[in-house]
Length: 480
Image (cartoon, rainbow, N blue to C red; front, side, top):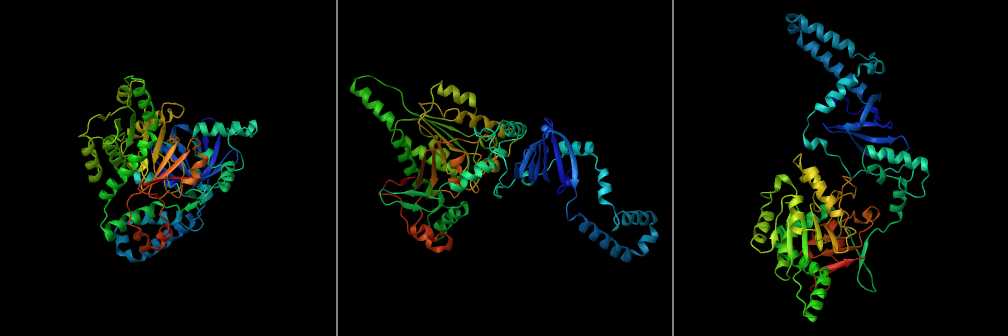
């Protein structure tokens, strides 16, 4: 099956729907098309289809460079034939094989006719058995989105026919088709392009790409001797103060209980989902600082099966070692144990620190079992959207399973935060997310301690130099 990459094919799903496109990637569990065109008229630049949904496959057209490649092969063969001379006389069987090859690869070779040689049964067998490195199965999510001709399947203004077609396709595949739609594209065209802060005089806050944030971090370390380890402690203090402010409703309840001489032993609970990356380390540092200033119960979950015992990053390991020395901190290794600790009491705050501005869950997920494991945790997080006792669902930098570079949805199970807290500057992709995360209401940035002169050392960072967006010593700023 791998030999047919670049071929223009038509896929028939088990529910009867048809999709055409160019075969881009193949893995044991899925097939990826480039420039996919759906039966209902919708299109997608990149589209992944699960193997268990396939019914039939038909080759429509050879890749445009196939004839050129075959011509190059013929020329190379002819040159090698002249050089071999005596070797060909010694081995007549090899000579006959080469003659047959030259005949088949001549300029008169009928490519269209030989498409009949494509054996679909063998191809599907290869499709299920092939094993390729994970890096080769990654799908780029930063390509331009091409709008389709239909509206969303769940749009109340759509007619019944197109809605039924859209639902039928998405049930067989994934949510990507819903997001690459002309109704979404029209909304994106009118959405805000930046964030603002301040009172009467609104200040436009520039947006940053992941590369720019990494450059800031690198220059601060190399030129100003301000390493990431120090930045974690600096930002941990500011994030902890913000979390304490978000927990103010509990402070009011405590005061009321004291005024009525009523003993109230309940304390707020924070559940944090972390990985071994920067975002996870910052989250753990913030929780450690919060434990020193407020009486809370802290539950830290690392759903990455391959990272549970030890983090890959030395800094993350150090933060984890420090917080384990404190009391009232729990580390459940399964969803069942997490529920057992909570005992049906919803957490006050849920923090999603599964990925940061420099990675995605897919980058960190190397265990075959981790994907389903992480998905069940994300579904548990999203189940608290409508729970009044859960004050906030917070994502650090970017919600899990959203690409921090492009804002594209990577998996259908992505976190639905009510609040996003950004590292230093908001990500360039965040305005795009307003269309797919309706419950997101608040955005904050926190100071990571980057020296102001850092921004003058790179032309692409100078737009950040003229602004000092953090008021007083708060270290955080809410954006609108």
